[in-house]
Length: 253
Ligand code: PEP
Image (cartoon, rainbow, N blue to C red):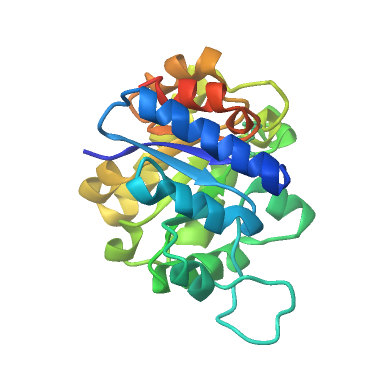
């Protein structure tokens, strides 16, 4: 059975002390609740807080992920962080291809494909984001856009490699806007993505791939989003910065 995943993307928020307080509050709540046994919680803080976050997760209440990685192995790339470095910290996951990276840092599907390769080479599981902007949805091009992102970013992988991929469908018009995709829109796109994977790698691989929804997911809408057969959890931005909200979303399964 594929995993349900609730992953918190803190983005560029929190100072050291604030991060410490947030993780400690999340731990408190996780200790007091009983999540569905198939639900994996992941926290993706900024790079400087990865070690602190990992230290809290020793008793494996949650897994830890980075928000970005270099597409290069090592060397003279000032300011970059390599997959080998993340591996040496024993991290589990890394977000790749978030729409903010695509828009502000000009990440193309080719760059994203190289980042995915780096992560897999170093035993990290990529959480690969895809999704259309508002204008693409309004002109009914969302399926073409997502198909291209998945095909160009991921379909060079072998079926064995693909087994480590987590996909996050994040309609860009829903990220940080308070505007959520309807459960029907989410289900429709998730089923479409699973169909693409099935066509390329077969039904067994597709059935095992966790496909998360991201975009203004909150405690108030998580249950109806996660109730859809092809929605396997969420990539959570704003609501992951409040322990109560984040854990309430994880409890929505
Ligand atoms: C995100 O950035 O991945 C995201 C889903 O953000 P938000 O939940 O704030 O819309």
